[in-house]
Length: 396
Image (tube, rainbow, N blue to C red; front, side, top):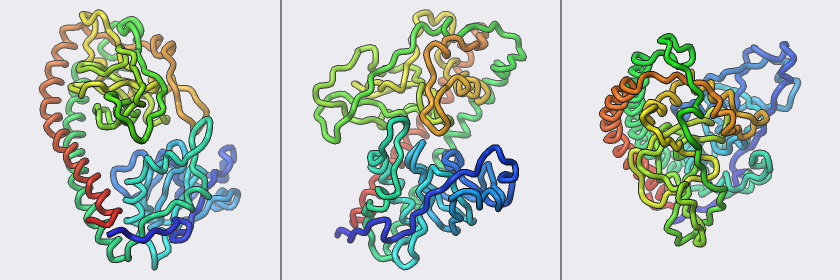
């Protein structure tokens, strides 16, 4: 059974946002909650009630932002396209949103939330722009959504809620183990930025010979290629996810050095401010997975100096990650990029190799446990995607 479809602009009001002038203190630190895509990037649930910034009534009146009633669906329409949340209190947004106020007799907010999440890639492909892609209000208003009766929408949202809760619990278990690993890193090596243990400081380029990347490849919707190109999202969670990839064109022939192999350390040299410099270690990988232009792998010829597992947790450390982020360039709201030259010049602590190896041994054992949880998480992700597909084509 397929559901009838309706344009989003017909079943919801769609509002853009705006930003008061940042150089006027009278516009800021008020009591009106104001949202940016960065606020949504940090969410652990589908609901949002707190943000980093608030504006005053003067600030609100000075620009074209709109106050969205609670239970609206906030959708980031640029930098990046695809963050989604439901507000639990009235709030307004910056210009990086196209937000929906569903018509109560037609569309359920949580149903819309899950549909937008399920169709993230499709919506991203609708974006246009040279510096960064943006999806316009006109385009999003004409997107059609399957629209079953409200009772069916709520049933679908409830089922997806339950499945999503299982995924979240498994992910929380993985995060706790990773926090244990990070705490062990600090205990053994100290803060890598302030370097309280006085380790030798070297440049990243002193221990990494080269950063190897792939090419910017346009991947078709259909292909019979044996190769798949990683998406940047394959490393953003700090865990390597080879399923975050697309088939390469049929004629694609990769640079052999850009093929991902077990033991590689991958680095996101371009992404949004929050996600640039994400790093993931490849414990295992399918064959014929190839790097894109926005991901590099570390090439280290002399591993008697440095352990890749030490480097991985160094690059994951929040203080060191902040230093990495400072290396990125790009205008506000755009894709940030880190150059090889700047990365090679960054100073890093280099403890004795024996201590690095001791940490690597602990890391390997702990990641054996994390891997078990990750396999379960991957299975739940697959189940969730299957449920989404069934939900929106009327077979759930």
